[in-house]
Image (cartoon, rainbow, N blue to C red; front, top):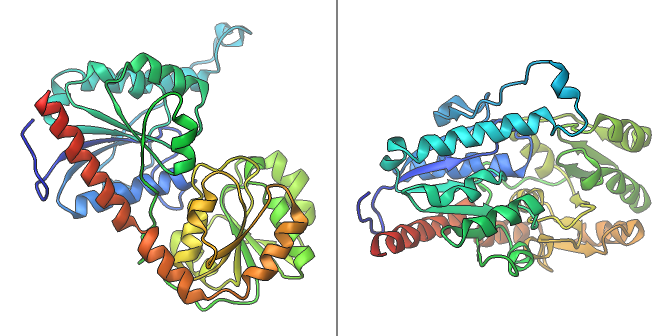
Amino acid sequence: MTLVSPGERLSICLVANCRFPIAEPFTGGLESMTWHLASELVRRGHEVAVFAAPGSDPSLGAVELSVEPMPDHPGRHDLGAPPFVEVAEHHAYLSLMLQLSGQEGEGFDLMHNNSLHYLPVAMARSLSMPVLTTLHTPPLWWLESAVRLDGGSSSFAAVSRHTAASWAPIVESTCVLNGVDVDQWPAGPGGATAVWSGRLVAEKAPHDAVLAARKAGIPIVLAGPILDLDYFRTEVEPLLGPEATYAGHLAQADLAALVGGSAVAVVTPAWDEPYGLVAAEALACGTPVAAYARGGLPEVVSADTGRLATGGDVDMLAAAITSALSLDRAQCRRHAEDELSLTRMVDRYEDLYLDIVGRRLAA
């Protein structure tokens, strides 16, 4: 490991989630953020090794975190046994950390952990390189336990001030807002419909978006992967019809065209969203946002780019949709360029990398 200064190249080990591939169409905001971070770091001249799920974008040169299916045998049916997927993921990250604790890890300046798994945190002090973990979730108990086991050897970033505050009793973190590539989310002309995008699961509550749009008198289009088929069939599908349609899981360019061609983007988390990347994507397209004021969303949506409603209040959300229709699309785009861009996010991470590596070398 050599001393680095601003403008010099770093060798970065970027650890991703092993459950979903880092490839388009992205399953969620975590996968999108990791792909864009890796791509921008490489564009800036850094060496980046991405450890990610099978099926990840070949252009990243990702090293597969293989999660082997467990063979079928009677022991799998022991009521006290953990789910086999969790065991397989545990072994995938254990193998990686053991590998990086040896000679192979000596070629990196830093590990950036984006995995959501506890082992890269719990085993961070076994590595010769410093570790930065981005906190993408509230303090889930398995991550909290790993942070306590880490004993202060790692550094932490949080994707919003809300997320940083929720972790504050456990660990100090630096807020680095997630960023979107504003070139890939170009300003659109708007349109006559609302749009909702994201994973179609209960905690994202797309059914609330349909109900609110119906009350506001505006058609709505839903887009994203269906990850909970039972929820979709019982709560969403019965609401579909001429005024509420499902466009499928779209490629990024197609999704950007849909969002940019919409009058308003509706964001309806049923939990405290750690950030709210779909809102930032909509604003980059110039599309104002009507959202539940949960988690980090009030940090993404400003008074001149969207309207916020109390979480779960469909009537208030319908009013927010109506009010957001009159907001200036050019101002939405400017806000995304100035405050929510990929460039700003990666600038901040580069500063953190240099500070962390410098502190390790000075120790």
